[in-house]
Image (cartoon, rainbow, N blue to C red):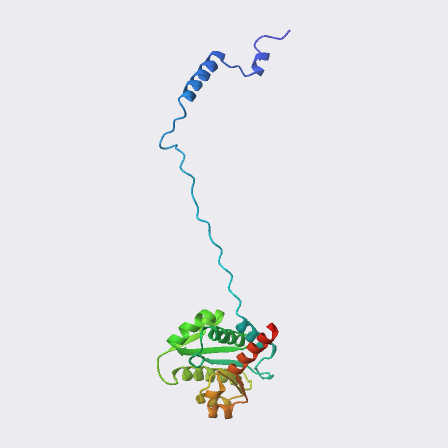
Length: 234
């Protein structure tokens, strides 16, 4: 027999007032018969609608650009010499239709990635047209004012700085690969080997042709890769 004043077995259970529970149950059934009511603050908002996004279409392959870059990678234009490589690109000389323009800019990027120093210049319209295709070198394209040889002088001054830096470092003069037809670039042969990638040898300056260590015809390279591609499809 337990002593009085201690907890009883009743304290181990949760006791419910059945009368109050029945009253709440009847009230709930009456509310349900009228249908649910909602206030403006609790009304469910209509489901949000989202506009499905259309994935961007993949860029179409540019076979001419790809083939030209593969050629310039497999057969680099640079001379096998232990000197700095300086690339000069006269964008004003690279006029072409849209497809060949893209391929020519891809070739410029390919050559730039092989160089130690890269300089590009041209009139504002040529630079604006080139930049979307120049990838990491887009900001290095320098727009110049209209006028004869303005871009050429910008490129020559950049090449002179590179030659000076090489001499200050105790190196031989750099080799320069110039993409242009203009005879003014013949002076570059005085500081080191000069390779010319001509946009079209029919317009190549005789002076530049005579001064260059080597001359390659970009138009001819484009024709070669196009012919190879057509032969592969046949």
